[in-house]
Image 1 (cartoon, helix red, strand yellow):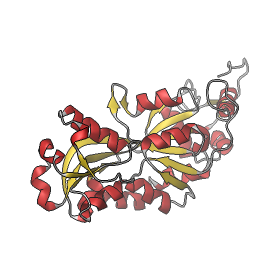
Image 2: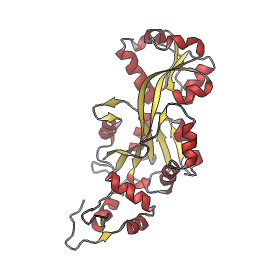
Image 3: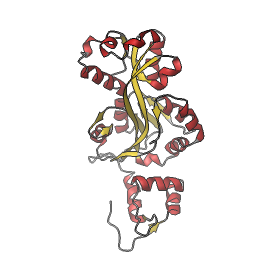
Image 4: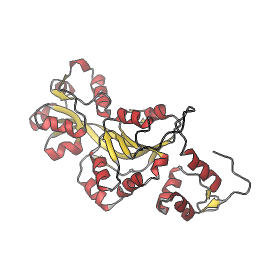
Length: 297
């Protein structure tokens, strides 16, 4: 960030909204989250123009470490599959394409500049859900982690196996539908079995499935007895569900791309009555903190 000049010019909320081509409400959100330089010395929000323009210039820089500037990111949403997110992208008119092929795959693709955002649910540690992994992966790149929802995850089975779901030893004896190795669900499930003293090599598994919905369908269709899935997908199919963890599903966003129409349309839609009505019909999801910035590079 450059030094503030002696005769600094300040922008009002309306002027900054016009400069960024976003709504005034969005400017208030950016100021509240600390994403944009702001002064509150006069009792109202004023934005130092020199620092704002330096902030915008920084958004055009490439990845850290002296690499060449990154090319324009394609309007693609990467990372983990989330049923609510997938629905919202379609219904928001965002125009975003999707490559939902696991959290760690999305993180790798995001680092390579292959998309504007990536959905993640990796694991919880001292830094909170996803934050330590993201910080280690992207460093001081021009990115932020924005909360989407908290989700109930656990063991999913057909009703005849419902009595086994509370006993992890019994679950380990059932045929399991695993996910690909880079999936956050697979990482979490392996941790659950490991902590319970169940060797991963002892698990009976079918070939890996590649989305949350495929995992539940594998159980529904009898290809597997149990999956480590979401309540939001188990209940509509009448499957038994035993909760194990409430995970945080967060979205890693490129800060420059945040101001582009695609992500703006998606997050604006997430504040609509249509979105809230759809959310109310999905079990095991908590979107009370949707849009909160949980980590900044």
